[in-house]
Each structure stands twice: as structure tokens, then as C-alpha cells.
Image 1 (tube, rainbow, N blue to C red):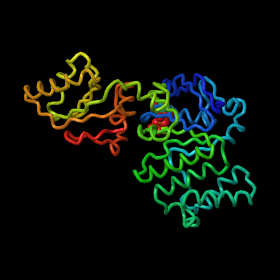
Image 2 (tube, protein in one colour):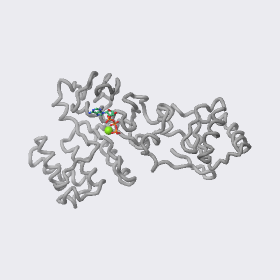
Image 3 (cartoon, rainbow, N blue to C red):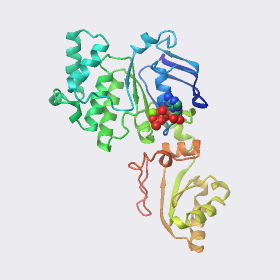
Image 4 (cartoon, helix red, strand yellow):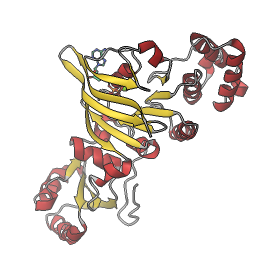
Length: 335
Ligand SMILES: Nc1ncnc2c1ncn2[C@@H]1O[C@H](COP(=O)(O)OP(=O)(O)OP(=O)(O)O)[C@@H](O)[C@H]1O
Ligand SMILES: [Mg+2]
């Protein structure tokens, strides 16, 4: 499959700050490609260069074989963008929002009318076509924005944090819509702070932090970076966290154990499982009460933790709604 996007050594500096630091990746036609990273990682800056809104400090971006620095207008016509901030015109109706946007692309009136009807239907907004967008819920506004970004029938659709701020139900509904776009052959680039979202949707994922790509691959490939064994999470009283962490880290193969609140996470290879039983005895002997212990297969969060040394949960707080603590007896595994 040909590459529809090729990015080489992309750099963007804002004064002293290097917001994007020598990023390179390609996207294949029909893929959903994810840029996964916390606040300030450089996701929006990368996207703004891809749509010709920002000029790179150095590096190149080619879309559909066209170098964006030389063919800016042509490239712009190939790309649809759903911005991170909601930008619907709240005083206009859903239909008027789509009309105004469609006219920017000089779509003939009759054709535009057809596309708008289809878009309203796609967005489940037919009943609300003539209601002001300002009266819509957050989920409805995001749906309107999604179909708006598709009105000129772009070859590449860029979604900048399409589900940030949405509740779980609306987020899952948005995921379904994005998958449907892939089925229609649209190439999708999406940015997200949600590890679970990248895992669910993306064919390939670039993990980005401080403007750099830390790892790139399929969810399975990325998880395999930490796949030797399961992750054990052990929770003690917060006041005893440091002491328990120190004891656990004193085991040679567990020096990578992390502490967050009273929870210690450690990756344990199968052959070292017995040592965990000994550790539980040691903790008990030291008077440290283990409140819960859970085990799960590595998740994207574990990948992020391993690559960056900090948890996305710590940096963004974005994962709390999907984070399930495994109980002592239940041992419910996370994905
Ligand atoms: N126009 C600008 N001038 C100066 N600094 C900027 C500008 N735009 C972005 N930055 C800085 O560049 C870095 C990357 O920002 P960017 O918006 O690309 O991050 P992001 O990954 O999209 O984050 P978020 O998830 O919060 O949207 C940040 O440190 C930000 O403050
Ligand atoms: Mg952003």
C-alpha cells in the first residue's frame, strides 16, 4: 500500500522551545494512525504543520506525493480537520454551519445540499438540522464537527483529540464513527491523550512526548515492549508506600517498580512469581498491610510508563475513568 503521508525530520521551534523535535513517520492509505501523548507533547503543533497552518522550522511533509511547502493550497484541499477546540457557530443551525463551511470549498449548491443531508443523517442530527448549534450537547457538537470536517470529502482526515472532554458513552459512539470512516477508505490521523483510545482505534501508534517520538508501532508491537510477564499492582496505605516500594525495589529484577499514591507497579516475569509470595511475607513481617493486589497484562499505559518514566495518568489525569483497580480476590484483568 502506498504512503499517503511522509514526514521527515520535522522540527518546530518557538523561540527557545523545541515543540516538535525531529519527528519522522509515514502513514499508509486507509490507515488510522495515532499520535498519542500528554498535554504539551507537540501533537497539535505537528498537525498544524501538516495542514499548512504553521511553517516548519525544518524538515519535510509530503501528502499524496505533494510537498506541502510548495503545494500548500493543493494539499489543504486534500485534508479535513476537526480541531481540538469546538468551533461550531453557536448562533447558526446545524445545517447553516455545514452550508457556510461547504461554500468555503466552492462546492456547487445542489451537490452541497446533497452532502449536507447525508452529513446530518451520518451525525444523527436530522431532527435537529434547524436548531441552533448552541443548544446542542457536547457530544452533538462534536458529531456536527466531525461531519463538517468531511464535507469537502477529504482524502486525509485529521482529528485533534476528537473525544477529549466527552463522557464514556459519547466517546465510544465517536470511536464507532471513526471506524466507519476507515471502512469508507478515508485515511485518518488522530491525536489522543487516551491510551485506551489509541489501543482501540489505531492501526499504528506513535507515542510522542516532549516533541519526540518515543516508540512507533501497532498496539501489539508496543505492548510487546513490556510483554515479558504480567504487571502486578500492589496497594498499601499511602503512608507506607515509600517503605514498601523500597523493599520491592531491593529485589534485583524489580528495581523498575514504580510508586503512585500507595500503589506499587512492578513487571514480574513468570519465573519470578514465587518471589512475590516471599515479598508478601516480608511486607507482613515488617507490619506493612497489603490492601489489595492485582495482576494484568501490559497495557498502553505500561508502555508509556516504561518509555517515558511517568504515567499518562499522572501527567493528564485522562485515564481515571477507564482505570480499573483489580481486587485481591477478583483478580480481574485489564486489557
Ligand atoms: N504558538 C506557540 N507559541 C509558543 N509556544 C507554543 C505555541 N504553540 C504551542 N506551543 C508550545 O509547544 C508545546 C507543544 O504544544 P502542542 O499544543 O503541540 O501540544 P499538544 O500535544 O497538542 O498538547 P495538548 O494535549 O495539550 O493539546 C507546548 O509546550 C506549547 O506550550
Ligand atoms: Mg493539542
